[in-house]
Length: 370
Image (tube, rainbow, N blue to C red; front, side):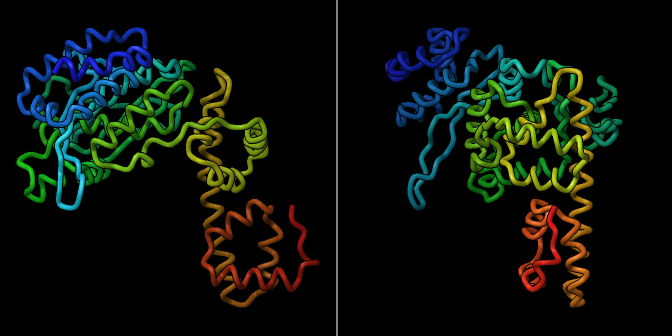
């Protein structure tokens, strides 16, 4: 077993952060394997999977030290051919490991995730604010009632609070899609894996994975890889929670600020939908210290108002097109900018767009796009 791990030493030392020592992690890995006969057998049968797991320790920067509980070695069945499965060793980041990567990035001061039960008092105080969660910390688990949800709060160095909330049904939906749970429910496995043995840890990790998508993206490459690993271990497609980290251009920033100053709700919504999630997230966190909360609330209000306006314009277009009212169609059209109209058209049924296009093409002189 030591020889299998030692084959990773050169690459490990090349990519690991300075705080991570190869010899220490080697020792932790050997200790884990010595205490888990099944995992040791899987590692011998699939040595490459063990080497990949050890290399992942270096690439994401989380220790296997059992006292720190940042990451674990696990075994997972992988489908290698039709009706053929193979057990392999993988690295699984923990809830505390993901929180550590977030704070190590330099963007987040601290991260906290908590479970909420029916007898707790929980109040969502809105964007930029920390929620209020009160409960008897010494109460027995059954005294707090049934699990109703989980939330994550991250505090930025500017003092803003980034809160993500997941109700019970969303958490259970994630659980039900995990390969381990599906195998358990279908009778192919004796247990449901960590979702059965460590439900709280899994719920916290789930909300952190979702919250990660809304955090400032500078220096979060290691966390992006950790989230990717965690998603793979659940059996999810990486694209669901590990989008590519992309910055915004100077032109996008100018236009974003212009939309805020002009209170252009519908244009802001259209602009948001035209960008990938990570680019808009970076714009959302691009304000100067002391102004972030104020302007983020303004963006949130614009997006909410833009969605309401969008629904109203769609209803108006649908009504005028259905009643064969070309003047009404033109009146609505002339009140929209080109970006707004293109966005609305993308949400309209094809038959309504055909009617609108026919009216516009017949009377081009009546149009005066902003």
